[in-house]
Amino acid sequence: MADIQTIKPDVLAKKQQDKEVHLIDVRTPAEFREVHAPIAVNIPLDQLTAEQIKDRVNGNGADPVYLICQSGNRSSKACQKLIDAGFVNVISVEGGTKAWEAEGLPVNRGKKTISLERQVRIAAGFLVLSGALLGMFVNPWFSGLSAFVGAGLMFAGITDTCGMAMILAKMPWNRA
Image (cartoon, rainbow, N blue to C red; front, side, top):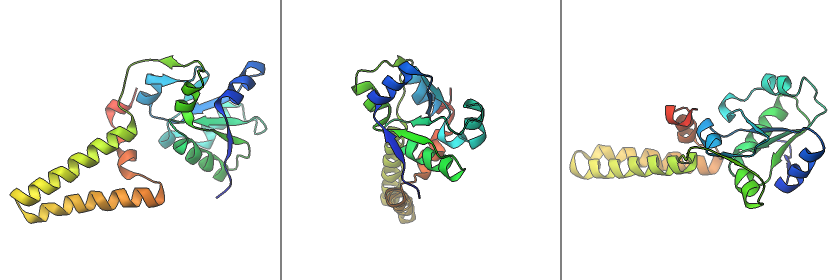
């Protein structure tokens, strides 16, 4: 795994005043619609391909490609995906859109949505509670649902990969 280059939002904003920068927001379309940097283009992480990026930068591998998400986690994964595909000049925006907004930089706002992270917590909590209640009142085997979700959360924490988030990202309400 290569070291991921990063840039602070204010430094990137200054760069874009001098020349065109390629900023790709890898969040879901619903998250992007809610708030995003005006210079960002939305290509969700699960749909991001090296070909799309080559088309966006006119095949020029010398120009840097900046990636942003909510807080920096998904953009780092996107950087790694592009590095694995042969890109050498990909840079993650430190702190993501949250940091961009906290710096007082301009943002475009749209329809409010529930973040993917909150959706995961809601779904996991619902499944754990359902499994526990069904296990107590219907059949003890339903407790396995709570154990399964707990194991999934542990796996997500250890590997930094969340299957539930990947599934939720594909849901219709997370699409534009």
